[in-house]
Structure formats: structure tokens, C-alpha cells
Image 1: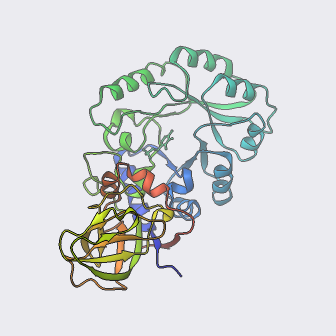
Image 2: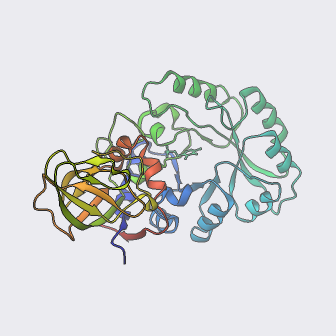
Image 3: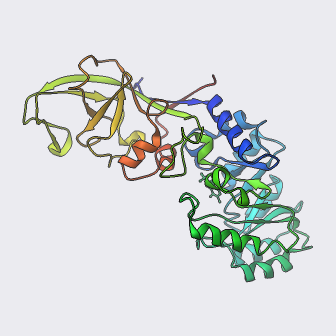
Length: 359
Ligand SMILES: *Cc1c(COP(=O)(O)O)cnc(C)c1O
């Protein structure tokens, strides 16, 4: 077995759900588990959160079917709605809550004959300009859907573009757009992603949609997960496979991209970009070897990466290595690689074994 494992701490996951709960007591939670629960494994995450949340949110019908098989009763929200007319039948069979964000979806819904009516979430484009109706259009959709035989509840949903920048003017404007529609008689309202849950009480509404915070990473550039009271859920752990001494001028890895400026001790680690470690992480990105922070050196290759152990002379072959997790925040590695924790977590590939524990 290749020594590389993503350990997943389900107790930390539940702790993070309780942080969301405490931020907004009395509200309901859709735990966002799209993209295989941000890479953590949807089955185990749904099972662990089953009794902690009122529902789950996913990106597609097959993700929804997987969650429904595990969670017979709760609500499951299809965040982008249906992608084809035929999907409304399946959505009704699975008893999903379905977003409607476009005229096309609206027409397909109204042309469907369903076994049972659906809970519909009309999506307002409050400023993200990605999916959804403008406010005036949404009022028109509301009138068309109110009382339609395909519709059980009629609800309102929107999504923030800049909630991760605290005090953003855009967020205020989006909130005002949303509030401007609340004269309509919606059954439920939902606006807050993790950033909204953590810092925008006025956006909490009826249903929260936390994603990244559940996994113990921060939605903010300037506020760490630890400062938010969140616990990391995934630790990506490998092993030191080899060590060697390099003379001044010798190089490491593909393209000979890193060159020793001093006599150096180089370690080779059992993790590469085919595991989901970012290939663009530059020399200097931190890696934990036996609990000590050392710098990545040279290009990340498919199965391996190298670190400079010159200042960690006690490190030896077989030592445990943490690429990110309990000892090294994923957000810090992401920042070095010019991305966000979301991307690193959700891109851990299938060949990396996930190992679950709960303490
Ligand atoms: C992914 C997603 C979320 C969760 O966002 P986080 O920033 O991970 O909390 C919430 N709402 C929608 C519509 C999403 O697509």
C-alpha cells in the first residue's frame, strides 16, 4: 500500500456543525455535501451529520439519490435544480427540494406531470450574475407557480458573491435585494453560505447553507479557521520515503527547478499532484515532517514531492508527513498555491484512501 491517507475526523465535523448551529440558533441547516462532501466522502459525512442537521444540499440528481439512500426523511436541496425535463419526475420520487433559476426550468416544471408536488426554491440573482432571476422577473415567476399543481411550497433562495470579504458593499446590496422580495408569501427563505452564517446575522433567514465551515476551513482570507473556532476535518498524511544529501549546485526534481545553495538534505514524500496536491505549490510551501515545518522544494511531481530537511536533521525515512490538516491549515497551503481551501479539499483524488475516525 502506498503510504498516503486522508484521515477524516467525524467528531470535528459534528463540532463544526454545532458552531453553525450556535451562530444561528432556531434556524434550520442544509449541510452542503456537493462534490463528495468537498472531497470528504458523502456517505460517511451524511451518516455523521444525520442527527445534527435538518437537510443536505447537493449539486445534481445523482448526488441527491446517494444522499436519499442514506437519509430517508430529511430535506435534500438540489442547488442548481434540474438539468433536463425528465429529471423532475426523479426529483419528485426522491422528494427533493428543487431550485428553479431560469425560464427554461420553469417551463419544464410546469409541463411535468409529477407523482407528487415539489418544494420549489425560486432563485434570485441578487448580484452574483451566475444563476437566477432578476427581482421583477422573480415576481412574475412567483405568480405563475403559486397554486400550480407541481408546486407544494414556494420558497426563496439567493447566493452571496462577496460574503468572504467582510463589510463588502456588494453583500449589503444583495441582502437589500433579497429583503425587497419578502412581501411575497414564501414558505421559507435561504441566503447564508458559511461566510453568511459566521458573520451576517441579518442574512440567516430560515435555512442556512454552510459548506466549507463544516469541513473546518475558513471562507475568509483574513480570518483563520482556528480563529472561527472550527476544527480541521481532513488531514492528508503521507510518509518520508527517502532522504539524500545534496552538494551546492545540485538540483531537485523535474526541470531541475530548485538548486541547492548550501549543502542540503532532501526528503522525498509519498504525495503528488495525482493525489490532489497542487502542482503549482511553489518552493517554500510548508509541509509538516514529524511535527516540524519544512519547505517544499522543486516541482511537485505526479506521485511525489520533495522537501528541504537541512534544518530538520532528526527527520528520517518512515517519518509521518502531513500535507495539510490538524498541524497545518489547508487554507495556508492553499494560499501558497494561489487557491482556496475549497479547491484543495474537493480535489483530493479517488486513489487516496479515506480513513474515518471520531474522537
Ligand atoms: C456551495 C454552495 C454553498 C456553500 O458555500 P460555502 O462557502 O462552502 O459555505 C451554499 N450555497 C450554494 C448555492 C452553493 O453553491
